[in-house]
Image (cartoon, rainbow, N blue to C red; front, side):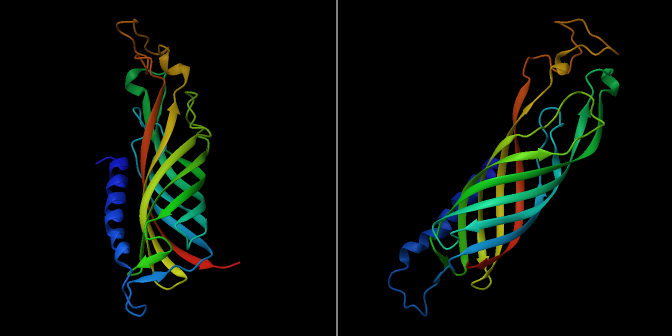
Length: 240
């Protein structure tokens, strides 16, 4: 199952779980499964796993741990706004377009990527919890800030890339201020490969166009990739 399909499945499951909200009318306050979410701001340290394949050549950073912090406004409302900052310690391969075919691929090597984003979250039970649960769906848009990889001389760089991240998850309220957060997201971004990937390697040139030894022989020098991200966190809500 792809990351996008997993997020969609989780979103549908959470939406079904949220449908009992319609039955809220008729419950006595003391016996109601619904309780107001404290209004204010929430700070949540997060930690999780960053997946994905790194694209057709596996040179996009992927596969590692991610940790960070999110800050949410309007956390007791149906729609809330969040800011997120995270750092991921990832790995990737290196493809040297100048070397022979047998020595072209090396690695993996480490690469750190910082993510900064703004997101919108739709709380499916509105400003209330249901049996202390508050499922949600949402989406974020952000920018990547990768570290350098001096070992890569191919001219490939992830660079500062805009990404889109649909998400689904649930908050579990331990108290009216403390909540556990579980979230699954798919992170979409576009890789662009350098022109050197279309050149014949000096160490082992081919005979183009029928027998090319270039890394890219089909003219596709860019690619959208999908990364799966699973996150957990502990949130604290406060009022200013």
